Image (cartoon, rainbow, N blue to C red; front, side, top):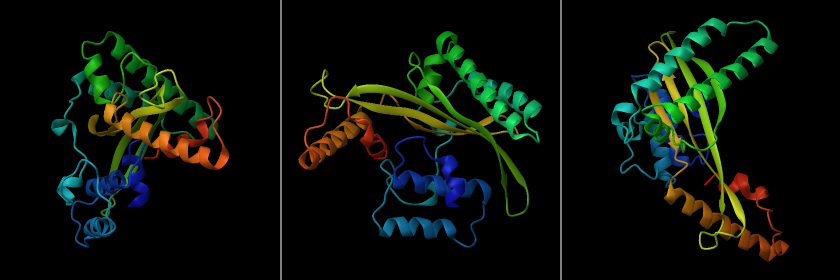
Length: 253
């Protein structure tokens, strides 16, 4: 359950609460009847340790499930799902190979194709801005297709659930101190994990960390500033630009 949940996590800034939501959603998709109450056991374990998702009011299976496109605050356009259909045809034609070298080149071309389709849609599409917001991206900024792959989930009844999992990332350099725009810089990452059902090219979930979120940016700036101040107490004043050693920490808030 824990390993499967990794594909249901946001690509950056994963919290314990979000991991719990990923565990519950991934298991719910594969095992509808939780007759052994595994999901309840996970929820109770997190509750006892005071680990709660930031945006969930109650800890129950229903409230912890990631929201699909129909219940999301931002909805994707039909063009985005049509794009998935195009990618499915590309995947079907190249998926099966016995060579690791061919598999590597296939995945690289797959990521390049996704990037070209999305970039063109953001720039020229009638719903480009809306779909970029749905994916947690700024439409005019550069972004990366970090991964794109096919996953076959096996249900307890031996049935297969084919899924298409894509992670998109976008990085911006921002001031560490919001009151000093010309001061030391830090990286601020955003993006999403997109989970789609390959059987009907339907988006199931878009698990995003918005690259334009002011609230999340302020939290990371506060943490990075505090970390830099604490480090200078032990190691002296940081040199200009020496922020990257802390990047892995402050992105994991």
